[in-house]
Each structure stands twice: as structure tokens, then as C-alpha cells.
Length: 274
Length: 285
Image (cartoon, rainbow over all chains, first blue to last red; front, top):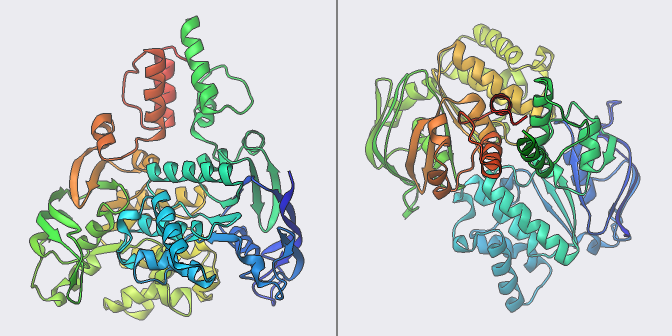
């Protein structure tokens, strides 16, 4: 595994007059093909981190290297071309008058030939299940549909690193699961790396690694099972929550983190013994 | 306050272009003091239904009765002012409606427009700010200097300051961390009970539906396809599947356990506590 993202001593603050830093001395790496979930309270610096990673903000100190290129090196503007960012609120990124045009915008900017463009747009819209809506006005779509279009616009560019800033929050649970599994399949087949900023613990639990931010610092980083075992204040996925609830009611369960599968199997076994 | 929809049909008009009908002959009766969750696939018309409640989307056909005010096509929009005060609306991403220089000015904007004197409005701003769990110290700050969760609370405070009788919320928890979301929703629930509001909540989180709402409306392609008490709605898996609606985590887990063990739990469980109780009751744990 080789790291595709290398962040070293990253420090940032919005208002230089105040002491407190939005992000202070952040260092971490993300391997190629890894799905990293970044979680933390509102105001912990997650979205700021996303903006820094794609070069929308400039770090005060420290460096960000993505695929060997420094993001803030103004000499190589191509450095950003293989990073895709989807914002929390899709309204923030619409410019086209139809869904197709909107998805085409990024492709036009990299001078893609027309035929290839048509193919890619169709494919991206089908992936997010918005192909039927291709000639609609994006501003007239519902919140969740807008979010899908925003994701399609990013997928059409075939980025090697995808950054999702709570990009699935407006979707209904079913579409969220579907889109999530589409993305998970995509990253496996195309070896894409994902950094997903999320509040959805089910999503975080399915990531390869979870990183917790608190007041602009990394407080913990590790596999989902490790994180949910050690950070008891974190709301765990449902199966673990049920286990804890049963323990308080006198049930006998192992202390360590249990996935849904494990929990179901355990309850079934119990049934057989009784 | 009662909300009555009588075969309401509506669409969005932009110059000569009309969108396909977003609400199709909706009949609905929300009783005074009810807490209703509206759920459905993206694009099913949930947000449009809310807009119709506030007179932002005027029906092309049929009529809406809110308390004793009627909204229908061709009616003078001025007469809707009363409704705007009675029905407090919290949009998706309400923080995008912040505009003033200070938090205080922003919260006072609504009440001042409805004729509340400045001194009283300022006092109200302070009170609601405390109620949404923020420190009054930020009253003099710019709303744009706050974090996402704080902005959301200020925006909701602005609505609460108008003291509406009906509270209409479009995904108030989206984008908040789990703790912040729980706080906002508990706050809304306690307001609902204390002030005897009629509350309508659009959400995608079935666990929120299970925890806070009493009734559930399911929408599909601009129509209400199911409306009833939450426990009876969530017990009809087949129907729900047809409308692409999920069940709460607890119910989903319950169904899985029931299928794998063959043991049927005594009741439809909607929360983790209910499921734990039920599992112990049938000796599964």
C-alpha cells in the first residue's frame, strides 16, 4: 500500500486576530484504495480540512501532498485535477441550466472531446440513478436529487481521490445505502481513494479506518471496531447499541465491539441453547 | 391549530414553463397538537407539501385551511400574512437564510416585521437563544462567524421568536453531528409539548420518526400514499417496500431476528429500548 495523501503539520485559522486555530498541527496519511471516514462534532474542523485538501484554502503552516504533488504549489494547477470534492449542500456547486450541462461543466474545463463527454455524462448519471432527469433544471430538483447530480459531476471527472463532505446527508436511507454501495464497488474496481466526512455512524462503521477530529486535532484514528470500543461517547451502529442496552438489562455479552452479523448469530445461538 | 388539505394540486410555475405537478390531489387532516413526520423517496414532494402549508406554494386546484384561514388559487397574497406568522417554517439548511450583521438583528427580524416593539423583540431574541442552547454572548456576533451547528440553531431561534402555532421543519437535523441533532430535535419535541404546537417534520432518519413523531405520512410522486399512527405504519413491511421506505433500525433488526430464529416478538419495536425489552421477554437474550 502506498500513501496517496500525505498531510504534515497542517495548521490553519480563518481569523488571524484570534489565538485559537481551526486546525492545529494535523499529520496523517491515506493509502491508495483506502476509505477513510472523518468524524467529529460540528465546528471540529472537518469541512475546513476538506477545503484545505483540495486547495480551496491555503494552510498557514504545513504541507499537503496528493499523489506526490503539493496541493498549494501554484505552478502545477493540474495537481487538483484528480481530486473530486462534493460539498454538504449541493446548492453550493450548481452552474448548469440542465442536469447534463451541469455534469458537463467539469469536463468542458478539461477540454474533453464531445463524444467522450457524452459517454461519461451518461455513465455518471446512471451510476447515481439520475439519467431520467438529464434534461431537467437542477435548481428545480429536490434536495436529494441535487446531491446525486453533484456526485455525478464529480464522478464524470474520474478522480483518483474523492472527498465527500457529508455528501449523502440529504438522501433517504435507501438511496444512501445504494449510492454508498455503488461508490464502494467503484473504488474497489478502479482503486479510488475516499475521504468521507460524515455524521452517519453506519457509514463510518463500513469504512476501512475512522479518524476523529476534535477542536482541530486528531484525537484518535483506527479501525471502526477499535474506535467504537474505545470511544464510548460515540453513538455506535445499531447492533452495538442494542448489545449495550441488553447489558444494562442484565444480558451477558462480550465487551468487545460486535457487528450486526455477530449480534444476529449470537442471538440465534442463544435461541438454540434455550 | 388544525391543517386541512382538500384535494390540493400544485406545481411550480416559472414564466410560461410549468413543472409537472408536484402535489396531486392531496387530502389530509392534521389535528391540532399532532406531531407528524413526512417521509418518502427523494423528489416525492415532501418539501413541496411543507411549502403549501406556509402559503409559499399556492394550490392550482383545491384548498388548504389553516386554522380559519383559507389558501386557494387566485387569493390575494396579502391575506397570507397571518399564516406566515402562525406557521413557522424551518427550511432545509436554514443557516442559508441568515443575513443580518448580528445574531440579535437576525433573530429580531421576524418579530419586528410582525409589529413587535424593538425592546420586546430583543428580549425575545435573548430568551429563544438560551432555549436553543446558545450563550447570549453571541448576540452581538456576526452569524457568519459561527460554526454550522450554531448557525442552524440561530436560524431556528429566529423562527421560534415569532411564536408560531404550527411548526414546519424540513430536515432540521441534516448535517449536524449526532449530539447536535439530538439536541435540536429534543428541543423541538419539548416545544411541541409545552406550547401545544402542531408540528410537521420532514426527515430521512427513521429513528427520528420512531423517537419523536406520533403520526407518519408517506409520500410518493406527489401523493400521500399512507397516513397513520407510526406503529401501525411500520408494521406493514410490504406496503413500505413498495414505496421505497425504510423501517427504523430496531424494526429492521427485529425482522431479521424473527426470520432467522422463527420466534415472533410480542410487539412492533421502534426503538433500541423496546427491542431490548422484547428480546428479554421472549428469552432471546
